[in-house]
Length: 460
Image: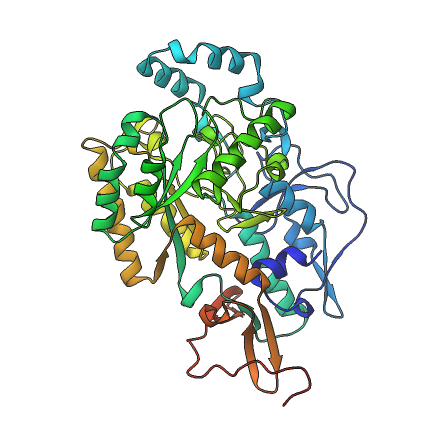
């Protein structure tokens, strides 16, 4: 049961010792574990709430410890998977979503004939209840991250430890990480990419461009090279962007084969599905290193749900980089906001947990004022955070590369102290989790002046 916590923090397994407090309920349901987080799964001793509304039981009061072992009233692996993989209740991607409903099929059949202005009004009407949804928590849901914090606190208390060492989340001791991505949806958006790269370069920020390989516009080798030669990144964005990718398993496999071929052709290691439609159980058919198709909170997306974490996580061999902020399209067209105020709130909430701040800004929707001015304000704010708060602004592929390196590193504790071993460890930092006034405190060690080389076994 302790695997997910030790993977998240990259701490030695001996510090996290978990067990079930008793037999689990037959039914799944919602419960709390502290003041903010909400969770879904089976529960020890009682049947949890069938809905996230009301006042679900707090599992924190059911935690016990004996001989350094923490006894939980739920299976942390099950609960974490239920959130990260969106396997909760009828909002799950595994239930019938809008795209697979009769109404959804009818909409996508006639969608090419519907004027853009009319489509926007239909989308607004269907998503009009977004601000009444209680779960995931708007504007950022950090339930998984808060759950793991509570486990670390419980471990400190159960073993009467002053601190637990772990590998800091980001390279060079960066406070948090930000990734800018651009989904290119039209020919006009494709042609605006050069201007958008100029804007990004003016702020010293490289980004990822998600391109649609078929039907929408021509993706030439010259276009792909123009992005990559300037240090930007290419991501495969669905196949045709028709919203049909996950409708049928056999059809999906056929499309996945084409998507994989385009990934190899364009030298792309990342993927994102159209309109954030997703089925995380099917990702294994895609031969990419990372995926960016899962929102943190999907209240303003056609497929509701959300993964409830602000950190990357593995789905099999694929690393998921969740979308943790509101898309520009929703900001401008659903919320009618032309400022970065919401983004700033989301950034602050994510940085409180040292998380991954990911954006989707479409070149198709920011060609004119005031949208391009809002985007420039966002970039200026990120630059300020980079300078003052040590925010690491990276391309998605760089995050994927780092997170995979970190996943293979180990903490070593011996007579020489505490150190990190593994490829890329020169950029890693030892960090410590401790408790102060009932809260978890994370501190990062500075870069050591001298790194003691690793020695073969038995050599002192």
